[in-house]
Length: 217
Ligand SMILES: *[C@@H]1O[C@H](CO)[C@@H](O)[C@H](O)[C@H]1NC(C)=O
Ligand SMILES: *[C@@H]1O[C@H](CO)[C@@H](O)[C@H](O)[C@H]1NC(C)=O
Image (cartoon, rainbow, N blue to C red; front, side, top):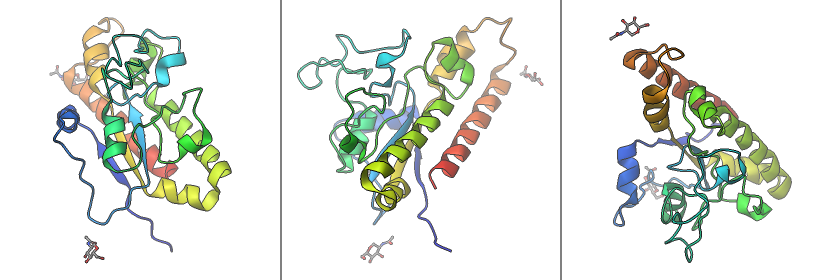
């Protein structure tokens, strides 16, 4: 049986995210690994503009966001400049900026090298995304499927499979679950305490990764 490469998967902790944002930091990859694309799932830390056309308040496509970005362009990145998704893609020599999959101006060639499926405000707990009308994490996975179909029709099955198999997968979520859902949901609909909610998040994160692992084959 053909042995697949081990999936490159990085779960970002906030600490790690902050580290790679410092100008001196570099992204380290396993020795001899060839990374062909970056695929990102999660929340505002890694959303490069997927929320722009959603009906939600969780948006950043207006000033002062993006004031240090390509001549002061707000793009839907929750930042004055680039965000970790872009930094990963750039540090790996793939591309300067990682496009948002839902960008209406996305061209077929932009699919090469990967995209971000993240949605600011999303969390592992489906309620987190629901409360602010953004895309739940399972929707990010459905978009990833859509991405694969589009990529195949563009560059052919074999090259598309290789791109997906040699991709770097980054999942960054959980802070909105804690900051928004856990601390701000009314107690009469929220039946969790800290330890049971943590368990729910771990279970959801784990099943997310399991589905992702099935999809990436
Ligand atoms: C990386 O490639 C070099 C040269 O082919 C080889 O000597 C080395 O053992 C490889 N390292 C790993 C971890 O596979
Ligand atoms: C948290 O909730 C669980 C299940 O409802 C319960 O078994 C546990 O004792 C609670 N823990 C604390 C610290 O209150």
